[in-house]
Image 1 (cartoon, rainbow, N blue to C red):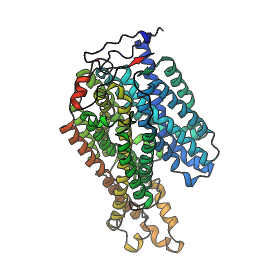
Image 2: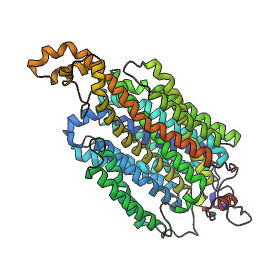
Image 3: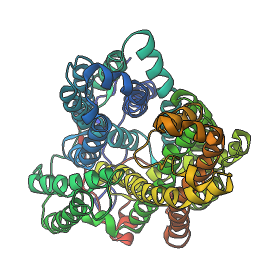
Image 4: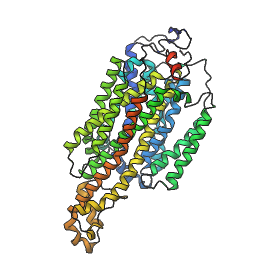
Length: 565
């Protein structure tokens, strides 16, 4: 296979000297191989968020680490979220290839260390290293597509990233259970190594380094430190909200500290020569509206992904693996609509109404799910999930196209990193708010539903409160209730156990519905933002930063020349 010599790549200046045509000139086979490699890397990163869940009980049992249970997942999400925008900016300064190779390598090292961990603290530390690597993979992978394909072409390929996320969510729990049961939990992490090595090799061989020789390559160290100081307390505070109240210092206190550092971060970035998150991006209306809409839409997306499987497991009595399959209609709608929407945008060059309709579908789909009751069947849930998935899918591809089409080429990585960041933080905020609504609704509904189920007041006191309880299946709930009843009272309580279970399921379902309302309201906000404020810029049919006119019209600085070696 012959590769074009990028040092001889023709550079065509636009009249104002602010743009270049065809920044990456490689043959179609190389492009296809690079696309496969970055999709593999994204698949590994996404899979790691779902495959570990089913293995966690075995891991905690083997490593005796109940006190660190939640941190195995939390530390990965924390480090990946914090590092994402920083990697995006560094890829603009030093090229995609070194940054994505560094990220994949760090992810594989973290995977290997996770697999050989002998203590829980070792696993948590290794998962943090994995997250630091994963933080580079998704935003830079999207930026690589921005380098290789014009905005008019990207839709055909960006939709595949949404499909990858849907597939990873589908097979992750089942694969985690299979590896844990038939080999050991260590292989949940070791399975990353061969696939990641293939992706790393292809990226190293084929992805050309992109350089900006005329730009100062100063790293915004102060901005990076302040950014982490702002985000880490906020994310930890929102995570702690699952078990603590908003006025607890470990929740509200940490969030206030993070907000104070956020204000300092804005001040620092306004004075940095190469800010990790250029504030000029937020003056671009296409980008700012997209970031707001993605942030809000993530409320519904993350809420559905977390709360609906919880309902399957608690009310329908499904296992964790079964609940993964039961949410397949939502994932199927997501995968199909993500791919189709990308194709539609590429063929028509238009995206605004597709985005508006998709945001409205998210609102409708999540609103239907708020109607959950204790006797709701899986068949009733199926069309609700399909509608929600069909709305979520296009948002995964379309907003990336919009942002990359509007951003100056020299800030493509930073803009893509910001989009990924707002999506992740939006989901975290949405889950914290939804969790608050769920907890208060469950406490409020339990007495009413127990009475409606025919449970006498003196017996209702033995019903589960839901606070801090882990009811993994409906079949076990009755046994758990009896086990918690003093032996002398069991004869009186036992006849009412089916009534208690019925009342608890009704209250639990209503509480889930209340939690999902935050996603409905946020999706309506995203619909309004895109309907009234999102402009529709023509998709560029050339590579590179040849968009000075539209950039200047929206308040962005035109991008400088780029070169390749």
